[in-house]
Amino acid sequence: MATTSDFRNGLCINFNGKIFQIIEFQHVKPGKGPAFVRTKLRNLDNGKVINNTFTAGIKIETVRIERRNYQFLYKDDMGYNIMNSETFEQTSVQEGLINAPKFIKDGMDVTVLFHAENEEVLGVELPQYVEYEITYTEPGIKGNTATNATKPAKIETEAEIRVPLFINIGDFVKVDTEKGEYNERVKK
Image (tube, rainbow, N blue to C red; front, side, top):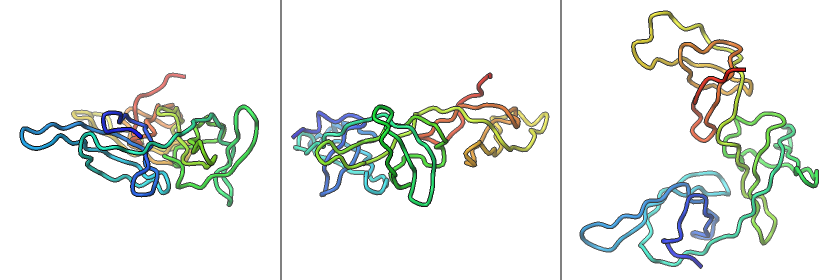
């Protein structure tokens, strides 16, 4: 058992009979009344994010999670096939367990969250920043740069992101997979 003072990003808790991961939290001490903790929780069963407020100091049941390194192999009708990097054991996971399935590409190293007691896969996390090649984008219009103008672009996984006007087909960009946003251009 833990209390709200033990909260940290990434901590997994048992809440309302389901396993949730804390995405972010904020301790609040108002002038009147008791302190409380505002949280954003991700349901590890379906990936939905909820907001919840806990009274400061209440006891919370934590869930022991193991993180293991896997490699994404391919996608088929059974789901996303991944391989353990140490034992070479392969398993298939459903799309709902992956935090950003539109950004996953063949050969990518991913982190798989396992429930420590029953060896159940709870989620698959991609690295926060990944490099992709731009496969399609319209050319930028010269002189249209007075503000931070962006344009749509497709990356090699067929996902669409917004990029600055100076990005062209064939350029490599670093993408924040958690936010789904362009981060910077990468020189190759």
